[in-house]
Image (cartoon, rainbow, N blue to C red; front, side, top):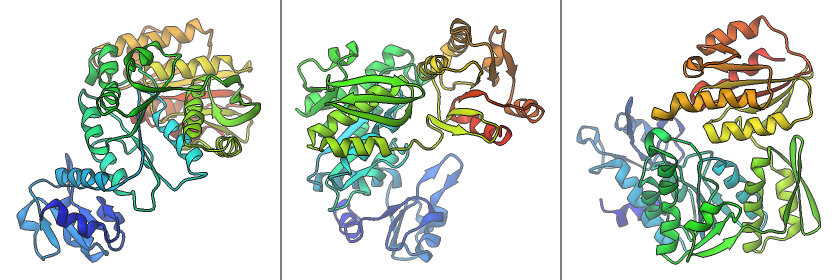
Length: 419
């Protein structure tokens, strides 16, 4: 079956699923493969749950005429998304960056959806599968698309841009993330800037944080819109408060590092003619979720800063800067290993350890085999299980507690032991 024929089927309902456990009626099931699973096995099951067709790439699973054999299921999904993008006559905003891209995407969406029908990346489904699924979730009712793009190796952003063909681009920042795949901070900058390259080569428009010299340099001779300089930072204790055009906005976001994310949402909102009243309401109503910079108050009056979704040296340092600035005499930082740092891993973990000392933080708990290799004066635990044993025998009261670590550490489990 060619892409045009497949598209005609897809465009009847604009539904695509890849998880056989979550099949929607009238969807097309794409039987993706992974290291530990083979979606082809569930082709018939998907049909029995309401899928119109199943797309497979192993002939032995073609047992009915509603199971379609293709050479490669993933490539077919990507080709269908690219074909669909060409049919969509709407502006698409593409964004990437080392830190803050999911929060920024959510803020942009919150602002734009006050006056438009938007479709944005769900969660952080921002890779070679997530971007096609985001595009295929857009329907003729969608007026603006917002596509988050993630990468941990060179040329991945370039590949995603070729599928999404964004009309607008924004890079949150360049940080020490995925150094194992990028090799160095210079590699990070080069790889993320593939979005800039696409925007420039296709005469599209980029939003630029002019406080970032690298962004300014990389967007020279591009159609660039600077983040509004009328937005002023007021405070972050703990929530970020800003002012723009005589309006005070009290957000539910913590950390000065979110100021640029908020500024991007306001600037992009202005570009699309969102009223100031709608911008204010959207930003004040936005609540961070999924373990991203959440403030949690416990029964014993502990205030927890939960930022356990992910971590790299840049975001860890920013979180510590913000935490150290909080007005509290009782602070505990619980920090978990940072992954995908390659040969820089021990050096970067040692830097974070030393930075805690430099900031004057006295109560720090380091968790994981990587932090365990550092030279430190702080309490360390080789594994979460050992940390758990410690927490089960300790009482916390009237403490400010930062929880920060890479996704693989799953440090949100700490909440089960702090009440």
